[in-house]
Image (tube, rainbow, N blue to C red; front, top):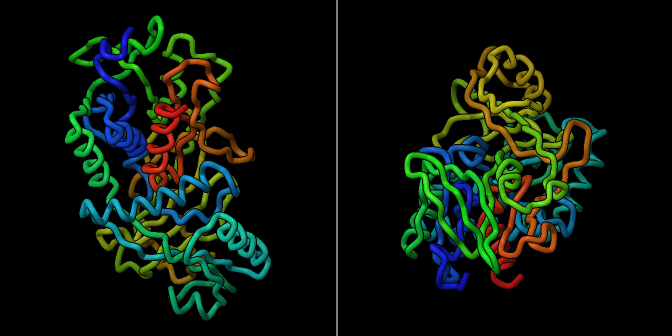
Length: 373
């Protein structure tokens, strides 16, 4: 098909933070964009069931997509939130070592942050931690001045508004049912829901979070061997009754496969702890109240002042993992034609934390892949 014969220049599958950021970046390059979302509202999946933390970029291997896109995305994100009047708070973060044997790991995180070009990270002794967050059990820590929080839903509404202001469309209740490459170039995309239809586009981006593998398998000609196995990493949260004890974020040292149960004072002023990590087979968002005791033991390792019975069940989220228990945590996967052989397609896999922080930079990277190869 000729370039002018397509219904849209680009179709994006998934209207979470990353999909919307991809749509925004493509629209900013003058492309006509359609974003498809299977749920009835934008951002109902991974993007609405997380900690809403703006990560500085401390932990990720140097040169990885997570390291580069988190730092670039965070810098762009603060400027974007300011310009769009989206509620956020640069509250900073304390990473704590609760015993002497953890200090080597803490020093390793500091070295990684320096290698990743993260600003505002400094070492703290126990007194320095106490000054930032009185009452923590610690032998030392790190201060990350650039860490913060945002209202992720209003952020996504702002991204949607930009796409629509540029003449694009974000359609909810429109599940992706499959795509077929067209002769020459482009894709025919089948859309379900009440307004079932087939639309064409020169370019296709898949950013559906937990459905990444299913969506890729629905694209004719996508090599099955190039679809990475996916896992559901469930994390639950408990809310603290009473006054929030700390202003900054408080993180213990990371656990295998995740950053561990951390503390935040959310934008509404309430204290929340989580998430933990367990692997599940289905999208189960229940929170077992009996896990409160397990959470309490974990939290008291760094905050012994947690009152008895003060944790109440809050919510759960599921992360699109590309690894299982005990396996190394892989990088973001942005798969272009050089990987799967389909020109005009970028497929995203494993966009978990720090995907929200990285979203604007991921969008730019995807647009660059499509526009410049």
